[in-house]
Image 1 (cartoon, rainbow, N blue to C red):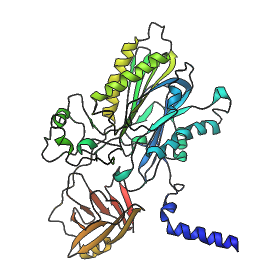
Image 2 (image 1 turned 90 degrees about the horizontal axis):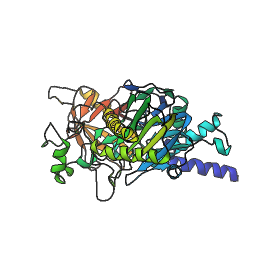
Image 3 (image 1 turned 30 degrees about the vertical axis):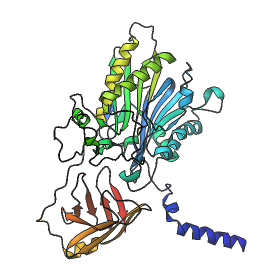
Image 4 (image 1 turned 90 degrees about the vertical axis):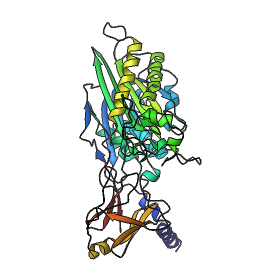
Length: 453
């Protein structure tokens, strides 16, 4: 009798809290090493694996050093989320690092960093012996909140899949891995899509690589001074330069800025890694980290604000002895690494979605409009109610959150792009695509969100 009562209570609790059911990520399938644009480089001592949950979308990037490496860390941002940072600061000169892990999901994504260590143990690569413990370090970015309509995060299963799928010489660029739903320029309301980037250079026997996930509050600046990506205010020049935004500050912050005085804008981070095969002692490795991290303020403006959690790791695979004639002076490593990091940051910027243009000549049948009406659920936190009035379609958010500018207070009229696609004109591209299956896809493509009736 008692067992029956407990079972009934458990079922009732589950039904009363559907978000608990939807929080189960066990049915999600990892997408491994996705991306057509990749950096190719010749360096067997570095293996890279990425994994993504398209339902987020969100992901994780694992940079694996199968022969272990030396490492240092430099933390600049006001809101970092890291694992094993303090250990790297002790400055031991024994190669112990197995992997650097970058993850989405904010602090929930920290699970993916420790998961890489346990995968190395489970797979027999590392053991419980004190001299053979797996050391995985890493940092997270914030890709939750109003940028997507769910709270799926990179978990243990996703991270371990990324590690086990790692491969040498290939790094996916753009909106993949940990950069799957990164953004930049929130300080100015740009809200441009971002991602992960990489760059590689070999000078004689010396190899240097830079890897980065850019989710910055500031804007990415090209070498000619122009903003790499921004959905700007209508009053701004189409030929927008970073100096223009700074000269007009703080007025340039106000239109559409995601920074609020109540702290809601604290959702940015750039996490990065600089690697060389030249052997460096702890002090030299720390100097490399400090120099490269400082240099990133040229490519990201402003950089390391109180609303960013910027972290950089410097790693030496120690394959090339610093005493050999082919080794570089440390200052050359520092400067070259800084330039490579700028290249990597620029490589992180994916093509931006263009603006849809509604036409008065598009006619949608009454039967189609009626078929689109109903309640669409994206998650326990976000939903849309679609209604039709006098051959016009309207949308209203039904959850506690807005849906990309569609609020909860009153219905918002949709403008037809085609018989299946609609938009809401504004500063940011917004497309609502109705499928015959009954699904509603918002912003079809790399950053799509899917709701079902």
